Length: 178
Figure 1 (spheres, one colour):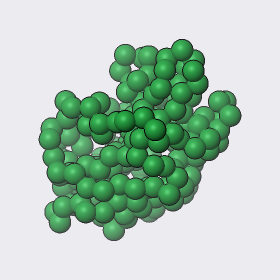
Figure 2 (spheres, rainbow, N blue to C red):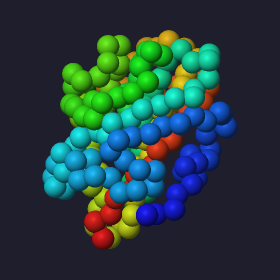
Figure 3 (cartoon, rainbow, N blue to C red):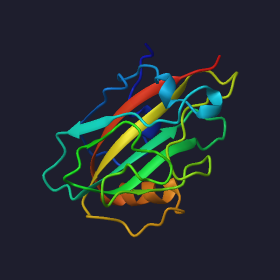
């Protein structure tokens, strides 16, 4: 298993409290299951199950993001972004990131990923680029929702989370085709 520092890739973010994020599909620092890989890379583009607890009392909503900071793009690769999850939602089922958002809880809004679809884009690290980290972050926010559309960028959501984040929980998976 790869040793990982959950905050290394996010060190420029404003420090906030942390809380627990777990998954029945993923162990911290462990490899992503084949289902979490992109279909064209032998997977199923299936988002992992996620659960979270221990967030601050003032939390009014959540956002969930997945970034591969090791992408050779120079800016990372956004695999998944979900906004406006009600504070009553403390987990997402496996495959909640199905394209179009049909399996999201009421109120949730999925944004376009860097592959150009509105859904979870599974791992597909290019050959020769080593092990990649897939950083799943649950953001506890001080607002009930953001005024976003499905074609807004994950970076736009990230900026809003920066200014409205109370805490974040992080779970990291890995993948490599080397």
